[in-house]
Length: 327
Ligand SMILES: [Zn+2]
Image 1 (cartoon, rainbow, N blue to C red):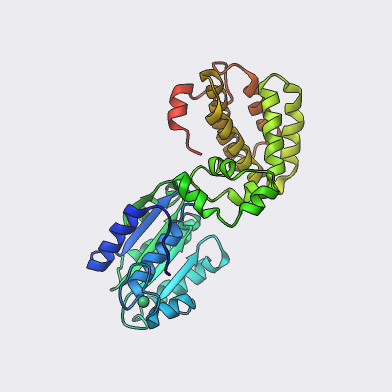
Image 2: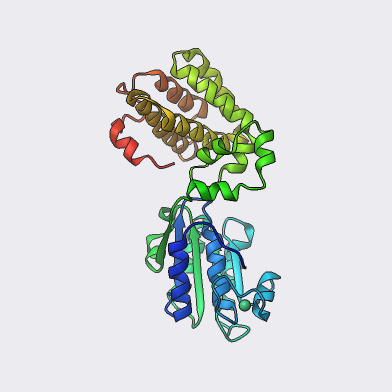
């Protein structure tokens, strides 16, 4: 796995040093927002541990690297925790197979991507396995929502944090998508600004450019006082249940961009409160099963109220909120 991964140079250098010196802990958790390259760094680390030369990311030409590139290395496992391959029986089988000696008698690496999607039962099974370390077996857990993992599991891991990517890195990574961006009626700098250091939403943004433009212009009008548009917008979004989660993420991006580009404190606070309300909305809809049209309507109507007026959550004062908002 040759080639640089943009960003995270501090983490990559430190991991390379630890892997080369044999001091790397056997259980590691990579934590950070989606779309910043955590899984790619995990793969680079895995390749370093399995390459004959021990080169960070793999030397690319030894027999082990060839197997890694062909995805046939018998001592490398990459598990997508959100998929069926990680049901409890498959996981049990995989963990049991780790009791046997590694195929080449050297290191063995298991990456659990989206580890925060492991069910409780699977997480507990994995925890049990981590409590009985096996020689030369490394576990790399990759997670966006570290808080969703059982604390007992997290406490077994050395946690590495991954920040957002710099805009310059996002720009470089978007090379090759210029045509799609242009076709969507967007500019590269607009997408870089909206991406906000992560590639997670970029494709949605490009594919759904019509929708987010419409959301932006409708929300602008509601904020300016045309509240009669709010019920229709809420109803329209709520109707498409299948894509509701995606639409709400897009809505957050729109609101966040308005917050960042607001030119006065009052507008900044207005959009910041709206952003906070949207997060509450998502929990209300997906965790408490409340009617999406109703909670969205409350949020849209609150957008027109003065920022100091009662918001949907009534929890935050705007200054604190601006310091703490995480999307
Ligand atoms: Zn190699």
